[in-house]
Image (cartoon, rainbow, N blue to C red):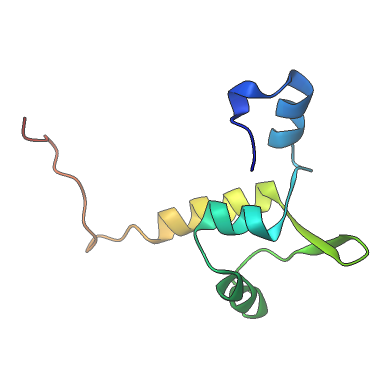
Length: 91
């Protein structure tokens, strides 16, 4: 489990937010809320960032690519026919 960003040292914060920060499958699942088989299915269809071998059989993803994919899905999921919060929320 990853510690909240506020609890990390400056060096850890830089590594966490850097373009070279990596994620394991468990972290990708946690951040995307997708199942492992769905992630691999999307990868096969070239609709999800590719993983790579870090060492031996350990595969990882770049955090920046996963975050970009999540932002892309949020934006493409917002269509004109989708629910939107009202301008003013009742009190």
